[in-house]
Structures are given as structure tokens and as C-alpha cells.
Length: 236
Image (cartoon, rainbow, N blue to C red; front, side, top):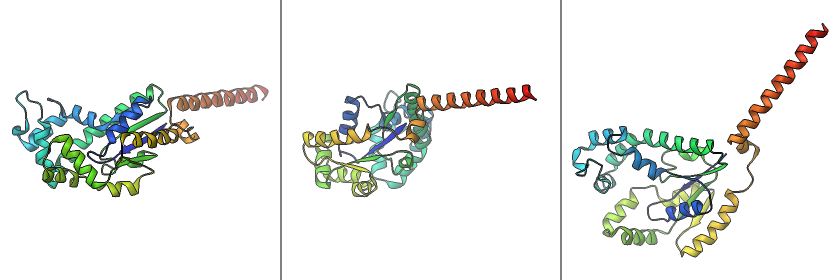
């Protein structure tokens, strides 16, 4: 099984690339969706976050007001680290189960869409690693336009994340999303060919089919050895 890491920064266009993978039939595990699930009212993640940040972060229906929580953590590094620490175990286990379900379905290539891929050390489990990069000024303008936020707040949110140039240096594949959507799609077509290239023997061994093949090989080997042993015993 090939687990592809996909990451980027806020307003870099990572979701655009993620959707392109989905449109081409490649299953994607979205860490943001997992994170939303672990923050739902009544879950373990919800209880931990409410205990740490207080009930003022809740909406009238008891769900976490993600925008309000975001304002708190993006402007305070220590609180942001606390939130990540509280939710990391729940998000990691959620991602694992999503991958496991796809493995059980026989998926050979899975894309992990994880904003904090490097920060959470998940990059060690993914190959290749794709970083969606955008130049700083374009990133700022897109974020301000997307969220209708002031420049100062937009810069705080960008600066709260690992620098995109640092992520770019750690990548196996870089998609430059500073231009038009068509330019991004052109780059994506080349990336898709790489991602869907034939699996190595090691990768095949990690697929469900590879595991069954290995099990069958072991069973045949045991039966063969048993037959040889029984023949030797009979002859003696």
C-alpha cells in the first residue's frame, strides 16, 4: 500500500489538490474532517477542549464555536500547542481507522491530507510527500479574500503555521499553486502519474491483496513441509 502525504499551508490550495485526487478516484483521508469529528459535542476531544478553554467557546447548541476557538489559538502559541496536544491522540486514531477501512476495501494508494503532516511527525509514514506551495503575497491575499479578514489577523494565521518554504524543502513533490487553476491542473496530471505508478514489492506487501498472498504462501509452505515430514516419518 502506498500512503501519499499531502500538505501545505492555509490558503495554499491544498484542498484544491485534494479534490483533484478525489475526482480521479484516489481515496483521500482528510485530517480536517477527522478533527471536526473529534470535536463534536460529547466526544472525548470535546470534553478535553471545553475543560481546558472553558464553556465560552461553545455555541448555544453546545458545539464548539470553531471560529472563536481559532481566534484564541492563532494569536497565542502556547494555547495553540495545548489544543494540538489535547486533540492529537484522537486525530491520530481517527486517521488510523480511516486508513484501515480503506485498506480493508483493498485500496492500494491512499492520500493523507494533513495540514500538520510535518509538525505531527506523520511524514515518516508517507511516501511521496506532496507540498502545495504558494508565494507569501498570493497566500495572504487569497486568505483575506476567502475569509474576509483583516491583514493583521490573516498574517497571524499564516505565521501560526510552519513556513511554506520549510515544507517545500522537505517535500518529494512540489505543486506551485501561485498561478491559475489550469496551471495547477497541468502540474497535477504529472503528479498523478507518479502517485499511481506501479507499487514496489514492499508497497504491494502492505496491501490487503499482498497480505493475503503472503498468508497463502505461508500456508502452502507449511503444508509442503508437513507433507515432506510425514513422508519421512512413513519411510522411517
